[in-house]
Image 1 (cartoon, rainbow, N blue to C red):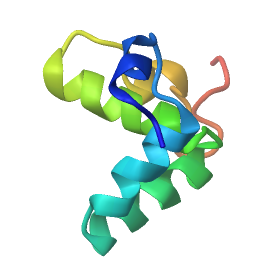
Image 2: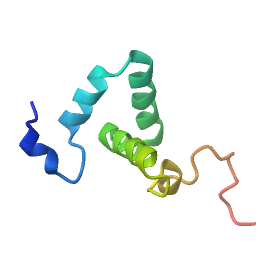
Image 3: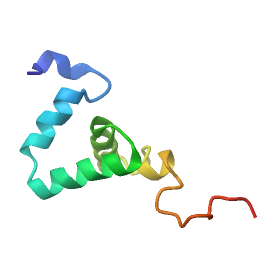
Length: 79
């Protein structure tokens, strides 16, 4: 289990992400896990970006990292 002294790291650890997921309601946990699978990112990165976006609207977002997700096929090609 992660101790308080380990929380000074710059990024959320996988174990910390799993602890956070364990206390979330099922539908929220499932949404985070499914989104992580959909975009091909680790669950800790998805949680970290979601928290950062909540705390700072100017922070890096999912759209910044994967701008093609959610766009119709062919919309990424130059005209």
